[in-house]
Structure formats: structure tokens, C-alpha cells
Image (cartoon, rainbow, N blue to C red; front, side, top):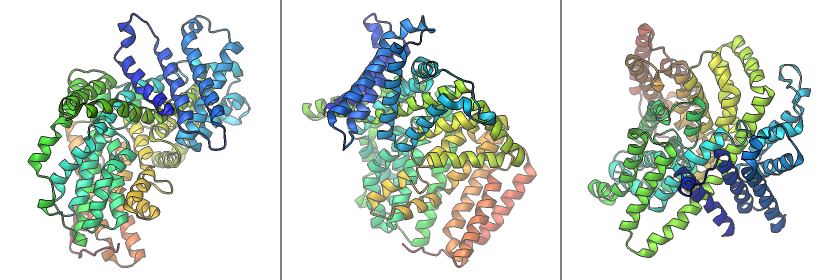
Length: 620
């Protein structure tokens, strides 16, 4: 419990900072001092909550305490060091070494070896980059200067990304923890059951609705799978969906929670800071792609249910809509509070989320039947929020290492030149494909926010230089970082769902990819046509919506009936042809009416032909 208590202090300290508690007591703290204190606790908690099996516990504790004290040393001396930037003595760089090592070790334990190795490789480049060949040769930087740049400069670890994690993301983590603690997942699942459970393939449609509703609030794919999937996956299996299909539907629906406004997971806040735009603009840009993600997933599930004769649950087995709505109002009130403070009053996202969490907590305190239920909620909530925050803060710190190294060495400029040469040889499409592939590969061992930061820093400038709109470039990277959660061999969301559904992990992963096929195409759509992100005239936006829906509807129909085209070779030919035709239609420029008409006419012709084919049930 001691390690859990250390983790629980993270949301407590963060909440006090966001609510400007130091000013209550007449104290003046710099933001970097707060970040250093919070990061020190996160490193200690990260090491203490994941002890090594073959290392004595006291040794782990010493490492964690030393790393924490190193960051607290920065907090205690930061104001003085601002006035003495020339001195780089051992009293500065020795704590820097201990603090940075602690961050990387805690990251390895919580976020996997890939991210830790990447941080180590970037550090190594910072030390010996002046020996690199060609355009990747960096200027020589003395080790003390480099270490202190990462340790105490706002372009390094205590910089932009960590500040986002320690304020905006922290507020929403607390909000999600409170909603979980007061039964938000259960309430949303009951609401989805009453709305969708009786329809054709009802349990699957219920999973889509429940996961989208819960995902908009939690912003965590795996948490979404484990919360709603525990109810929806068994129901889908009982109604006739094969285990792999039931688990894949839940994984794909849950993954969409990170692109669904208003919360959108941790990465959306980082996008807003990178682009220096309001968070509300990011939410608005995300609306249409998220809507199509869920709409076309729903369409695929409906066609599968029709082809396999899967009906809904009897109404008598489902909650009544009126009762579900009445029971969900304690959840809707905090959400309305969040929207009011965020969109109407213009408060900072982190503070808006804390006010919404406070509203949920007050309601629970009033409605809880027993005093014990009211009092036991707070420590559980703090521990849950703290454990969620540990990897997020560590990823943000590693992002500071990467960004700082790129800034001080000029690596970003070299990469932009190299990627520009790829674009000159093959155009923008190969550059987008390389970017997507790297985002998916990095996502094998990194959290989504880590993937986004790394790929955005390295690749986004090159995409923008080749004519991709700024917000489109960042959303492209964001989407493919998310899709790594569904893409084998390490499809974390699919495997989490497979563990609930008792299905084969590999089959669940490949089925999830098929269900999410539109999500693999949408990023290319807004890379070539940013109207889908509300970046254009209303006519362009309307035409983009029409072409994307037509292409997605076409793909759903063809993929649902592809078993009618003969053997495996025929099915693959049909699938690839459908992808090509659907993809071309989706990216048709909105200012070319002839191309739009031809594309939709072609889709319509093929679609009518396809609808004449019989529905062929698929084997389980």
C-alpha cells in the first residue's frame, strides 16, 4: 500500500496546483518547480510500484528516492539557477544524471523496453552526434551542457509536454477516476443496452454505443475494453457472434474512444499545445472523423448480423429506456458541467475537468446510501488516478528528452531534409505511408501519446513542408499511433478483449483490423483533403462527408458479402479492389465536381451489383 499511497499523492498535488493553492498561502512557485516535484514523485512511484524480482527491495527504494530527490533538488534551486546559467558544476549535473536515469528506468518498467531504448538512443546521439555521417552530423555539445539542457531547460524535460501532462491531462485523469468510482461505466452500459440491445445484432451495437460513450469520458482504450467489454463481449457471444468477432468489435469500438470528443485521451491535449491552438479547436476537428469511425463500424456490424441471422436481445431482458435515462442523470450532470466550463466559459481543460469531477463527487456524496460508501470513495479514486498518471507523466518526461535533443542537435532539420528527398522521388503518398508505418511500429511498445510525440517531432515538419495542412499532419500521426493498438503483432486493445472473450489473440487482432479498415483510410483522406477536419468551406465539408460516407458504405457492403466471390483468392481480389475504389472515392477533391460524380456513380454501380449477391454466413 505504501507505493500506492505515493502514487495517490500525484492527483492530490496536481489538483492543488491547478486550483492555484500556492496563492492561497501567499506562496509563489514557478511552473518548472511544480513539474520537478511532481515528476520526482512519479519516478519514485513508478519504481516502487513495479519492483524488480531479482533486486532487493531496499535497493529499488534507494534508486527511487535518489531520483526523486534529484528532481526536488532542481525544484529547490531552479530560481537561483536561472540567474546563474553559466555555472555547470557537479552540484548541477550529478543530480541531472540521477534524475534522467530514474526517468528512463521507471519508463522501462511501466511503458516497456522500446520507449526506454529509444530514449537511450536519443541520449547517445546527443553525446556522440558530432561523429554521425552526412546530414546527421550534429554540433559538439559538452556533456554537462547537454545534461543540464535536458534537466532544467524549458525545452527539455520540464517543458511543454510535461506541463500538459501535469495540468490538462491530470485534470481529466481525475475526472475519469471519479466517474469510474461512482459507477459511470455501469450507467453508460445500461443506457446503451436499452437503446441498442433489441436491434439486429443488438449486443454488438450496444458495445459500440457503450464504448463510444464511455470512451469519450475515459480516453483510455484498455480501460474502456475492460470496463464495458466485461458486459458486452459475453452478451455478443450468447447472441451468436463468434468469440474472435465479439472481442474485435469491443476492441475497435473502445479504441475509438481516444478520438471521440470531448476527452479524446491524453494525446489531444498535446496536439493543442504543439499547434498552439485552443483545445476546443482540436475537439471540433476530431468530430467528423470520429463520427464516421463509429458510423461505418456500426454499418459493418449490421451487415455481418444480417448475413449471419444474429438477432437482438428480447426487450424484457433489457433495461427500460426511461429508467436508464433517469438513472444516468448523475453522470450527465458532470458531463454538462465539463462542457459548460470548457466551451462556454472558456476555462482551461484541466480546471474544467476538475470542476466536473467535483460535481460528480458532490452528487455521489449526496446520493450514497451509507456514510461508509461516501468516505471510501476518495482514497480509491486517488489511488486509481495516481496509478494511471504514472506512465503518462513518464512518457511526457521522455518526450522532453527527445524534443530537447532534437532542438539542441539540429536532428529535426536533418530528418526534414531526408524525408523531403523521399517526397521528391515519390510524392507525398510514400512519405505518408512511411510515417504511418513508423507510427504503427513504434506503437508496438509505446503508449499512444509517446508515439505521437516522437513521430510528430520527427515527421510532422516534413509532411507540412510537402503541402499537408498542419492540423492534418498531426491528426494523421495521431490516428496511426492509435491504430497500433489494433494492429498485430502487439495489438494491445484486441488482446485485452480476447482475454475477456476467450478467443485466439491473433484471430482477434486480424478481425479487428478488418473491422477498423475505414480507420486506416480516413487519415489519408484528411491528409489530402482537410475539409473533413472542418478546415474548409461548408460546401467542401459537405462534399467530403458525402464521398467518405459513400466509400465507407461501399466497403461495408463489399466486405460483408466478399464470401460470395468464391475462394480465398477471389475474396482477396475483391477486398483489394474495394479498398482501391473506396479509397480513391474518399480522397476525391471537393472542388472537382466531375471527379466526385464519376466516383460516386462508379461506387453506386458496383454497390447495386453487390447487393444482388446473397448474404453468405461466415464460419465462426
